[in-house]
Image (tube, rainbow, N blue to C red):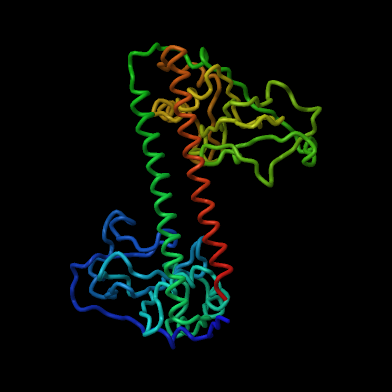
Length: 384
């Protein structure tokens, strides 16, 4: 039977402070989402300045606790230095190294379980300071207790999570490559100036969505009304707080058909106006009153047209509002815009190509999500 022994962090680690005067080392910072990053990558420049002399020299295999709160890590996060043999890190981080027979990577993974959060919460003396750092001293931080297996089991867990993390990173890079390929293809395809110029209203049908009153809202036995919040990352999704209305107040002109496109026409956040998504369901749903319902002969082509620089320029020109008022995109203005399009057969070919590419991107996104879910499951169930 595998025995996990409870130990204080102070008994298995040693604090790391100061530096040897070498100021030519990489200057790093911790992102709760991405781990160690150079300051120049995260902030577009090295912000250490004269304070660099006070930075801590961290060696490969050493760890730092960034006690800054965030949505991802409300009680801070710990990362081990892997990429560089030596680097300079902010003095405000609680930096430390593992003692003999303690795997430092195991400690990083242990903190990712969030099982330490209740203890960290107890040791934090007050809420975040003006600099966003939680009030927890190193002497309190090293009081947290961990359950540790023997070094052989720590090493096995390191290999498991190292393989899993590398696989996640690989799939994430492939996903970003697919997205980059899509954007580059859209730029090249829609830079063709030999196509025919038409008005947007000649190739699409636009309708405003359903306007309803609070008394029209019913339970989920009614008809779902899709709003701006249903468009997430250029996809239409159902939410737990979706609005349903009585069927007798709906209208066919607001009904979504498969492969229609939904566009946000008005929103208090101007940057969200104009976002769009292809409707892939065949359910009976209605477009909301602050939405534009778009129907087209070649919807896949139009959908990627709305990802092009042409559409971005139209939004910049046509959206009214801002500075505290609601941003608004009028159907009449959008209908009048001029756009270059190829002949019908080429539209179909372009649309089909991008639709298949979007499907590949979606499959890759699901794979990344599933791998991250697997990682979270293992973190919660393989550690005490």
